[in-house]
Image 1 (cartoon, one colour):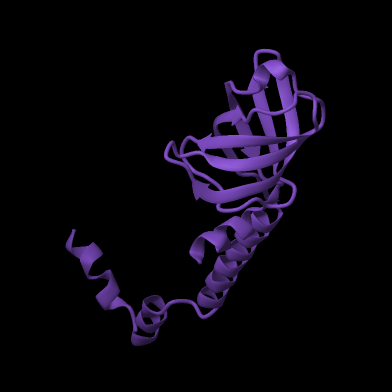
Image 2 (cartoon, rainbow, N blue to C red):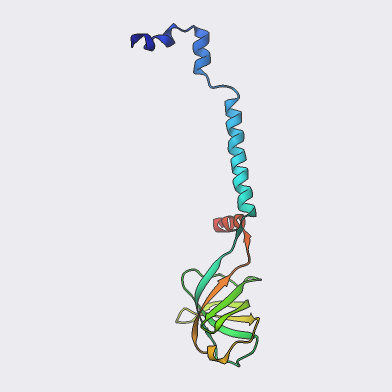
Length: 155
């Protein structure tokens, strides 16, 4: 046991100096690997699409059935968009089927029930039975790079 402890003391000064130092090429190689990993993560975040989806309930305001632009009152469940962005699509989930359209406007003010006024241009005419009834909806943003979302959250 004592022989193993003394092996470092038995080496010459030059050998102890070499064993005690970190190899010169190790630090630049490690920094290169770390930089490559960070660039790879940034590249993945840039090319990975991210799509935000909001959910809640909607009430179609009283109006004429069958028209393509409909006024809505939207109540979001958890998170809510700050403003209407171009390309946001809204889908009403009804027993009669799903009705999709593009969100045109979204007011930032909320009424006493926490609903926001919005107008949506639907692809197909809506049945008159939907007007005045509460129905579920999903609102989704157009896909953007995940890096955009990460940088937006930092502001």
